[in-house]
Length: 397
Image 1 (tube, rainbow, N blue to C red):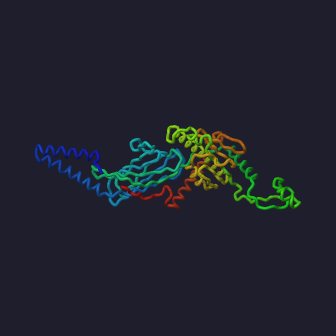
Image 2 (tube, one colour; image 1 turned 180 degrees about the vertical axis):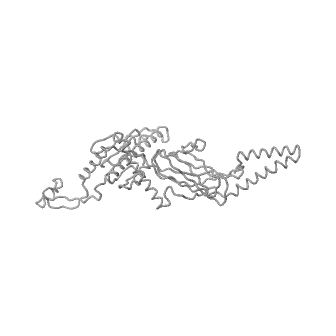
């Protein structure tokens, strides 16, 4: 608890009046000192007795970088009093307020200040701008309680943190590339061999490559291998990662961890991971729009997606880490550096930028991201613990 600037000014007036009253008489003491002193005492008592409010935070739905959203703060307390809330924003999110309301700390985090008229059910909202993909953490919130005259202030920290997701940017492939990619993946699936199931006698028209020559020699007749049917014949396997030449550069440089070279390598790895996430999201959503299912392997694991259910894939790519391409045995391989990405299919390697479509072809991709946002809303309705729901703050100190 400490006086505000107004409180210091009132205190200075009281002290000056007391000094004048001592020199020139008690009338000045009674007229200025007593009311000022009573105001300061009343302010201290009011702020000391004011209960710390609970803070509930409603977060915006997931979306791509470059979009804006709104965070809503609700304060709840048994009695009403003036309060100011300062919310901490992560480095990948900018405040939508002006320079005076939004401040950025040395670690890149920003703070957003909002004034609340009364702490009993008061709600304020402020704008944010999404800048980078990832799972971003908002909080803690600092609540400054003042008296009705604004003479004394007490600040407490509500150590409640909430998270929301920013998807990677999603581009669009040209119509010709989409057709080529779709035809290629269909051909790759036709040639794919699944799990061995049984042997049977040769029938005219069977491929000679399916003949099991060892069993045929034993039985004296041609025997053909049969394979178990694939559960999802339209599933496309995609592997994505960072080109190996950009991974582990700090280890090759011989610099100490935390040095300037290591910091530069970390920034390079982050840029390559962002590029990889964007390219993989673009390729995957293009295939999903065309009706194919997708199995995506990245350095962070594996995820599956089907048409109409893209949220798990975008959530995975939002937080994917830097790492080598997990496997080259896939229908499509995406390899990225900090300067760009390549997409390999049909034995050929293409620059990702060369595969992009025009702005007129981007509408369906926007709809795919919007559908993923709808999945986010349904998830919050089903699970109150999901990001974006309201949660009571736990007060420390």
